[in-house]
Image 1 (spheres, one colour):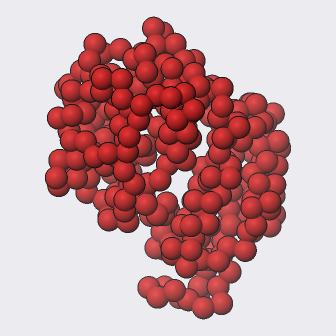
Image 2: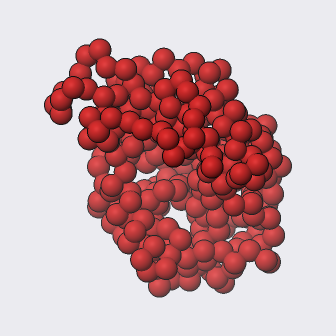
Length: 287
C-alpha cells in the first residue's frame, strides 16, 4: 500500500477522497506536474515547480504552496514509498480550484484549492547505447486539441484520445502536426529531429507544452556544443530526418525508429541521440 498526500495530510492512497463537486472532477479545472526521481533524487524540480506556478497563475488559482513546501511533500512521498515502489519513483502533483457548493462555470470565490499528490514506480532509466536500444515506433496525426496547450491543465481528454489512437495500433506515442503540416509535439511528449548533425525542435507557442525534459535537453546540447535550433519543421522533414527523439519526464530521451509507415534513416537509434542521452544521464540531477 502506497502513501499519498491530500490537503495537508499524508494517508494511504486508497483512502484519499475528494468531493464530487470538486472543479477538477467536474471541469478539469486544475494544473498538474509529474516530477521524476532516480535513487531518491529528483530531476528538474525547480523547473517543474516554476511551470506549475506559471500554469496556476494563467488559470487564476492561488495554491498557497511555497517551493520549499512542495519540495518537502515530493521528497517525503519518494522516501515513504521507496520500499513499496523501488528506487525510481515519479510524483504526480495535482492542484484543482477546489470544491464549490454547486456546478457553475464561473470561477467561485472563497474556495480552497484541492492539493493532491501520489507516487508511482518508474522504469529504470535506459542506457545510452545506440547499438542495444531498440527504439520505438509512433503514430502520426493532425493535432485536434485546444489552442492553449502551453498550460499543463488536468483537462487532458484531447491528449488521451490522441495517445489512445497510437496505443491501439501498438505504438508508443502519437506525433501531432498542425493545419500547416508542421510538427507541434506528441500527445505526451516533445519532439526533436536530427538532420546533418543539427538538432531541431519546434519553438514554444500556445500549441506546445514547455516540457521540462525538453528544456534540460536543450541545456545539455548547449553544454556539449552540439548544434541545435528551435525552429518549425514539417511532416516531410520529420520523415527525412536522420534521427527522431521524443522527450518527457517518464521517457527521458526516447529514440524513434518508425513514424507511421515510415522508417527513420536506417531504423536504429542514432549517434547524436547516444551522445545527448549520455550527457543528459550525467547532468540531469545538476541542471
